[in-house]
Amino acid sequence: MNAVKVDEAHRIQLSVLKPGDLYQPEVHGPEADEITLRRLKPAQRKMTKAEALKAIDSTPLRFGGTWDELRKETREA
Image (tube, rainbow, N blue to C red; front, side, top):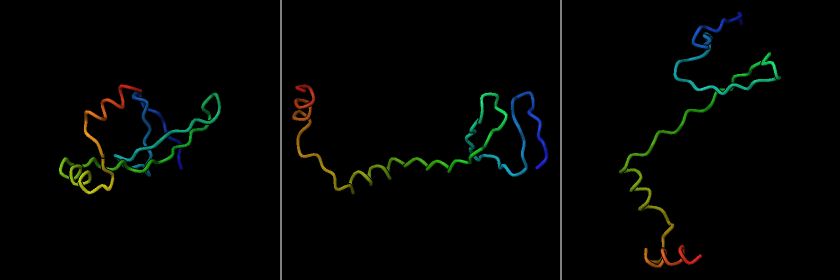
């Protein structure tokens, strides 16, 4: 790979990097003589409200008391 130059905005351009990809730099040594870029996996998309409500309804976890009982337990601790 050819040498690259950092521009005024502190950016570098490499032909193997694609727009939108996310990389984590690892700086090796106190003088930053060597830097490794590690590509991160894309973040999962956020659930829609309908998907979240469906997931809540389908979970086997259930709360067995009333909100007042829960308030009592958490405030008496």
